[in-house]
Length: 102
Image (cartoon, rainbow, N blue to C red; front, side, top):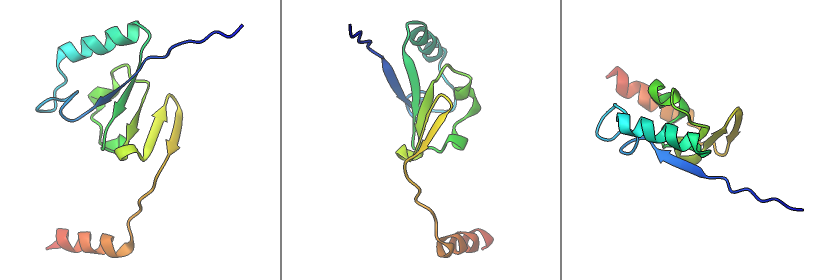
């Protein structure tokens, strides 16, 4: 016997969606996330930001992981997958340092 289960996965953009017009998460959004989690849904952040750039308040919510750095970094539970590394060559680092020193 084969038993199929349907998993409901939802991906939420950070800027403009979870944080509309600022840096505050609406209480209605928080309630909706907890209700979706209660109903068995898996919730994921999806952002161009790196994982370190996501505000701490979002990590207090019931997310199961996320897609970060425009898809280059994926986290599900404790599992992490790095899909891409753009890297920055020394010339670009030197240019940025010079700009900030001026």
